[in-house]
Image (cartoon, rainbow, N blue to C red; front, side, top):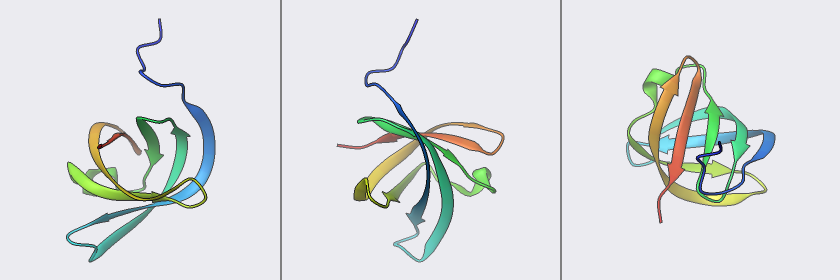
Length: 81
C-alpha cells in the first residue's frame, strides 16, 4: 500500500543542496520527485543537515527542505511550505 501523499515521478537529474547560509553546496542526483519531497543520491549523505535549501534545475527554484531519512547514499527529503 502506497503511503505517499503525492505521486512521485522518476528522475535522474543533478540537484544541489545548500546549507550554512549558502556557503556549503553539495551536488546530488535526484532519483524521484513529487510535490511534497524527493529522493536524492548523495556521495556523503551523512553531511546533509536536518534543514537546508535544495535546487532541481528545470523543476524548481531554490526551496527549503528537511531530511526525513538516510539509507546508505540516499536521502529522503520533504519540501517545506
